[in-house]
Length: 383
Image 1 (cartoon, rainbow, N blue to C red):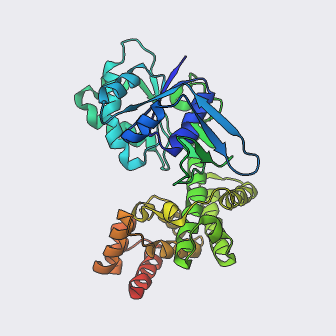
Image 2: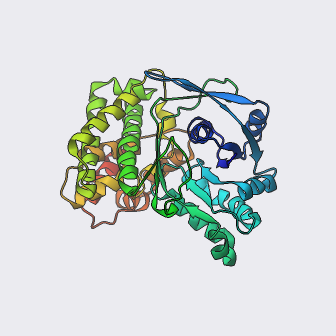
Image 3: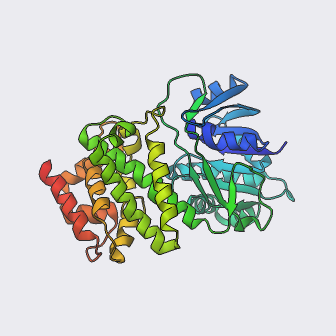
């Protein structure tokens, strides 16, 4: 059987990418640095992915094992050396730690073996490009030789997998909806067989539609809900004022998607409605604290708020609702989240102009800058 190695054995790895690779007929090797999780995976021969909500089904996954890339990096490298597909779901900032293991695996890959398909399944634009850059940095002068042993393809992934989840071994609860789009071009007609994914000629519209609708909407709900004192995403959206604010923000991002990619406004309206229904799923009690974590990353220049808002401002489109969501993000406080703590510290020690430049990457001459500066100043006045 073909072999797939997936970095990141958490709920997303097991409940999304791992499931689709299993259903595509791959033997699975999960690579992770959480020793207890690795041991738990290796202590069982199957786990269940439970789809919670209308239309959901249970899926049993078999044919897997796990390796601890911290305790036994050689085992992880050996798996990469033999793999047909390598995927990740570790978070964009962790890719630099995955890259050396992949480099070691490519070094061990037999001469003449077919290129391994490498795909980073992260909530970020061009995540596989980022992983490739990290691999080049880790490989040094051997990079050209090792890159020839792989094909790198960017992806767009979408499935809500709430955490934390009630402990039930390594079983995972997810929503029924799933989308995995992969750019077809790099494979030159020889793409891996993954029936649960779809290969597309132009990936950017899929990535940005997802990032600027699902991710923007999810985070906006979390920050607006947290500011209003709600605990979960579903509870937040049940508040009419928050629902209206999130819908307004997504109307603004849809306007950007229409302008940039020529997407159909009616299709986007239906997509927005479907996304909000997913967020309301009562069987997925996702918390505002989980969804809101890492606010500094989410407020950065090309992320889910500032990215579309900046382009909207450049084109003279509306940005008021996105700026309102940014203001709510600035108020997000969570002592357990390092970025949230740092953000509140910066609000106390930086001027409004300094903070906008440092956190959002906007320069003072950008048309969005004044509105975001005003939002920062309002948050600072409230501290």
